[in-house]
Amino acid sequence: AASLLTIHNLAYQGWFDQPWAVHSGVARYVPDSRQPLHPLHWSALALGIYHADVINTVSETYAREIVTPGLGQGLDPLLRRRQEVLLGITNGLDYDQFDPATDPSIPQTYDFPSSDQKRVNKQALQVRMALVKDPTLPLVGSVGRITEMKGIQIMLDGVARLLQEGQRFQFVLLGTGQADTGHGQVLPRLGAALAPGPLAEGQRLAGQLQALQGDLDRDRGHPLLALGPLH
Image (cartoon, rainbow, N blue to C red):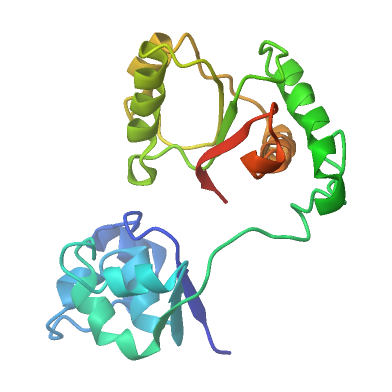
């Protein structure tokens, strides 16, 4: 059977040493030591790149970036060797799951002609997150992995700066990721804290945040903003 390897984030490579490879049986998949790129193959991701029939990434841009020394995370020589089978696909939402007209995770479904009804979802989210129930306050939402590569620290610093300037808005962050990205120092300054919850609850909340996106011109008096990665 043919194999496809999808690279979502090249930074997570799964490095291992020779004793572990021998013990686990992985050593038989490591290319011969006489090959010039042999030292690069001691990771799960590198072996996937080496053996896969086709390799793709989450965007055409990322596929071009990861073959460069600056963004290849040390695997760019191997990726350049497999470049003829490396391609990028467009990443995005599952519109069957995140369709506000049918999504069961949001209190009020709506479509384009009835988009004014999504203000009900904003109010429900304010209640769910113990925020002030104020339709005139912008509600900023971010759904994404809490990792340095996704710019979480840049986003939180920006939120803190806006608050220091006296801007009035509400902010909801949903995601999983690293505990050492620095947000532990920023969140107290925002008057916020991490509130862990089960995965199923996070998926429902993601649907509610996604349903708040809208055109500000259509929502005068009910500003609904989206900030950060929403996939």
